[in-house]
Length: 250
Image 1 (cartoon, helix red, strand yellow):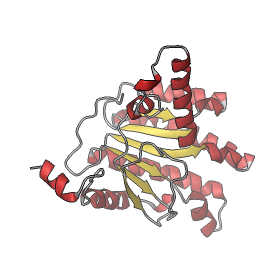
Image 2 (cartoon, one colour; image 1 turned 60 degrees about the vertical axis):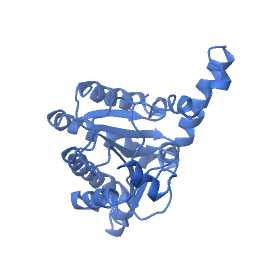
Image 3 (cartoon, one colour; image 1 turned 45 degrees about the vertical axis):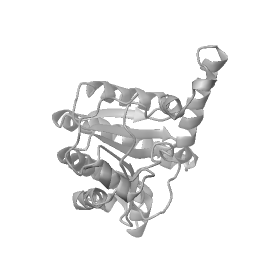
Image 4 (cartoon, helix red, strand yellow; image 1 turned 90 degrees about the vertical axis):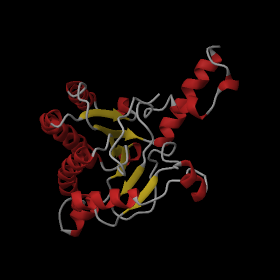
């Protein structure tokens, strides 16, 4: 079950998920090492977290490191892991000042023990915060999450603790790593690619999608506000007709 979510201001999504793409291409276009793009991307994370908090978004989930990213060159993976940990430790005081809570989702056991422990300490430090929840999808794969949820259900059923006939969408959703928060209202992808990249596949079934060609390091508060404005102008129908949605609001 997701946690109780404070209603955001009118027109503001309660949960925004972002695929932060384009760091490497941003750096390459400038004749720089790919790692320089990741470093600049951290500054964007700070800007967008501030914007989301100021606008009243309740959850901001960032695709920080996918399970597929483990296949990248070892040097780049090591640099990314170090950058993520150092950046979060550096930003933790600001998270506290802004009442932002930090959480992680993903196959965390695959992370280097030292990095995981340091991130878990930051999570514990912000656990009391009640404003925006910043969720880092680390070593994350939507397929991994769905398979893991199905496995836990199967184990319970085999043990006689669960009647298979009672299984439904809510039962599976309750076993996902995202069960503590509502499904994303808005999915933003930077960098221009038109794909989901194994990200929150179950949860974004009815999310609104906003894709921009802007690389993540160049994505700013005005861009974020533009995505929110476009979202607020859309009619979310959830399989109904526009007329049914309009009638239900009267």
